[in-house]
Image 1 (cartoon, one colour):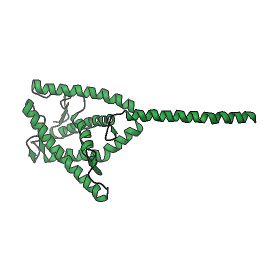
Image 2 (tube, one colour):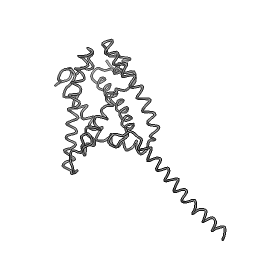
Image 3 (spheres, helix red, strand yellow):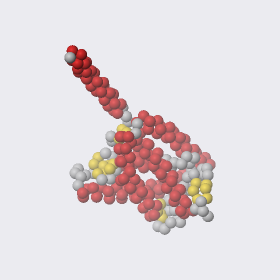
Image 4 (cartoon, one colour):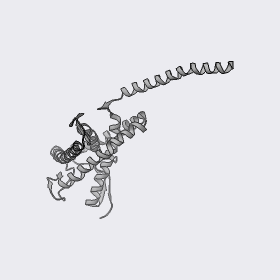
Length: 241
């Protein structure tokens, strides 16, 4: 009986020690989270990682369009299968729109209360802004790069309803709708998945290493533009004639 009492006493004494250890661990995790660089409550590392994924999707999308219109695919001016400019879309959309169902411009909600009406209106605004961003973005970037370097980045003149060779109705609808759908159905679920299921330190290491390679690849492209006056084509693969 005495032994049982002693065992119970030891267990009772051990409980506060375990609780203290758990509390200390929680405090350490909380401090670690506070040190993370965040943008409106979301870790920048996660946004960068999603930007890298979108850069790859952009590379695939451009080559898909190239395949349909010309019958071949190419390097898209890059050594790696990424077009980093598409990664910027993650930050731009997150900063300007937030959640399409409850649109917030630079963190400030457009509507004080969320109703069915404001939800529909938020999505309409987000879609319209997406179209505008694609149209004016392509128009400005394409013409500006040609004026500065003499390089023609792309040409839509084979498509109907174009405005110069750099912007048109079909590309605007295609890329604009695609960007909206990604934000609507993929961005926030992906952020939550990364936050809940992926180790922060591991994804930070991966993001930093890949980002350094992408920056070097992008610098090489711009050096070709400004020094040689042409875009680098590292490889071309003819699928059908």
